[in-house]
Image 1 (cartoon, rainbow, N blue to C red):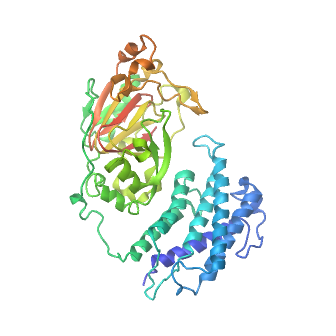
Image 2: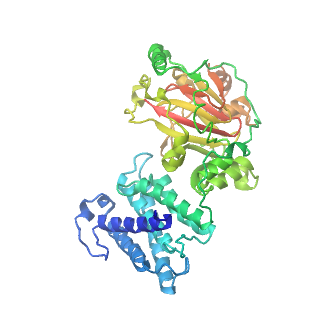
Image 3: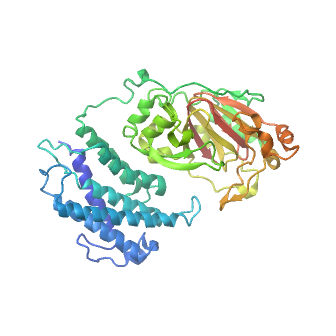
Length: 497
């Protein structure tokens, strides 16, 4: 008989606490056995005090699991007064360590955060999860079915692990993202047992009959200079297209490129209920951009439950929520956080071709080992302002429709590129608000330009297109592009060089 998920999760938590203590140079009783790890180990650059603090917390969490052995007949979630006091103190100390680690993140620009700080954050978050889960017996009844008493408890368990994935990338060797994915899968199985639902249901069964996202388009801009559209090309022919264009490489729409993806067919992302089923009934957390555009003064970011994001920003937006601001899950490495969705898509073969380098030698990046994959999910009206990408981009449309306008690299001087703003390099983003220029957002464009500049920008040549479900837009590196969701939209972008 296979081990129940609640028991597997208890064992995984105890093992993680033991590993963390060992990597911080302590045995299971808190005795120093590998003092050199504090100065030479993977976490050593964090400083000896923080390594010692993490190790001592791991030992104390491990002690909770050791003391719970043989006590599985206890009332689920019930602790003695002393245990509750100790656990409350431990939660506070772990929160302090997590907070202290996170403050270190601000010293580094995006992508430059050292692995040791990311691992420190991840390990402390795993310990917090293990601490919270220690309150629930590994077998709560004679049947061995694990118990989690309420929704608030399961949400509290999910939060530290999702934050570790989102903020720290789940860094670690023996643990890290792999451990987190396994723990969350076991937690989900335990929760389903708790609800009495142990049936095995095919993922695609019945989803086609569920209500889909709205296809309403409040605004549909005209396409005036259409991007060339072709049927799917063989990989060799696409490579010829890249090789033969020289410095005149242009965007290209490939129709029906992804219509064999499960996300488009048997696992339909156009059905909210399917996405909820793959995100722990919508309890998984995701980073959401709040506001019309990341260049607007009132723009902010918030981490919220996926189900709350769908209900408040996609399905039934409420004016009172964030004063009616748009919510956009934008440029998120969704599949690193939610690998259960990874099988619903496939990296197109085109992303393994050899495209030409960036036209500006100073902007060229080292060659990627694998394409960078990001997801974009938002309601009608969400925009990405006029900008350039550091890599070649294949933008695929899974759900809904998007309008894209593109300007050639040769027009870069007319794009009014921003500079450094609040310590952030914004040279890849234009100061021109295309939605304002065209009057799509109800903003008078004249106030944003000096005399004559508006007419001058409107004279700059561009190409544009509307992407529908199944389409893919190839955007050559260096091309400026503005993207606007016309309806509820789900897109996946693939960057490569």
